[in-house]
Amino acid sequence: MGKAQFIAEPGIPQFIVTREFAAPRDLLFRAHTDPDLLVRWLGPRDLLMTVDRLEVRDGGRWGYTHYDAEGNTYSFHGLYHGTPSPDGIVQTYEFTDLPGEISLNTITFEDRGGGTLLRQNTVYQSVEHRDGYTAAGAEAGLGQSLDRLDELVTELARTS
Image (cartoon, rainbow, N blue to C red):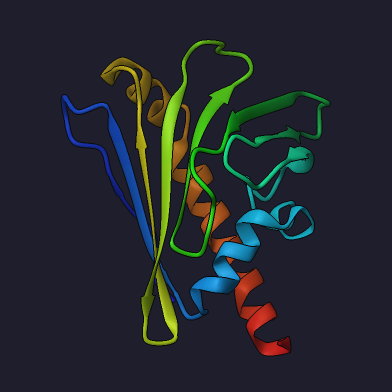
């Protein structure tokens, strides 16, 4: 429905992503919490993904790994805070190769009359941590992920 917007204000350890989808928020929530759907959209197109753990509940753990064509792996994990729902998801986020650099990720799904505004607000421990994340290609990777999510929820909305 639209392209993602990225906001990384200078001096603020925060990265905000928004995008509108022509799908109901329940469907977007399901795509974030169903492991069979999650692997179909999360990450750049050239990576494969496995869900290692997905305990969608307050205090539940999540983890997944991306694989590139050369056999490199990129693993991420965290914890859910509060009970995930179509109102939103709050979780910590940590890249396994950078232990201790934990961010807090809040995802909300705002009903827009049959469509949904997804907003992801990630708060980092420092501006340097945030800048490292953005310099590593966050916009490109997230942009591809959200394009894939749009394709998925469009397909699911047609068949449900």
